[in-house]
Length: 310
Image (cartoon, rainbow, N blue to C red; front, top):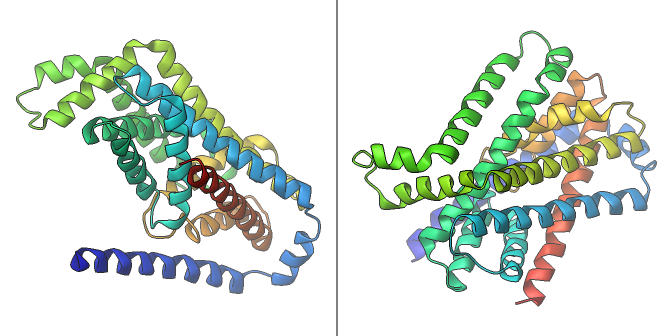
């Protein structure tokens, strides 16, 4: 048991070190006085508003998981799903990667009577829906990126990858059962075959799939709103569509499992993108730090709801 824990703690320590190193490096690279001056223009009410927006995102994420779970087979009741999701959102802020929150969802679902296989498939489908919506947003806002970013940036390549991912996902959602039947000999794992079948159940409920993707788009839209609102608060003149255009890149980069809850990686990405937009790096770093802090506080609120609701 001790042997299995040591690598995990070492990896967590490494990712924490990377997060701290990136944030400290960025702090040394920007104008701290400019950050302090801009910070004075942000009201407590604005910060509270962003925290509430982040918390709404977490509620919507729980609703999406519940919707997908109910439409694809036996699942938990709404109260259990939201409670478990709050615990997972809290875990995302203290575990090395957001995948840790997914493992929490699976384990807590198992404790509530759901099989591990079934719980894992609902989480995979939920995650996939979120990624599909992110790729759809990337495709929809591609024209914004082409105007904002230098010609050397691989915008077209990103869109091509996004289009392939969306097409492949919809193929599985709408024809998963057919694929499972025709290629059952090649699909050795029963869990994977069942995933194709359950994905197809989601596809048969056309409105449900639409609702799930719409919820995901709203979640991403709220994230862009947080960025936009904080930028306006410190005097950055930028429109909402621009923030909506860069959000998919920020979200995708945060998925790289090299830091704790995206800290450092998120800040570096925001600073880079804001610099491309002509914004002073110190202001981009300030926006990202406040945004990350708001996410962490809303996650703590989620953790309190989960803990006291057990």
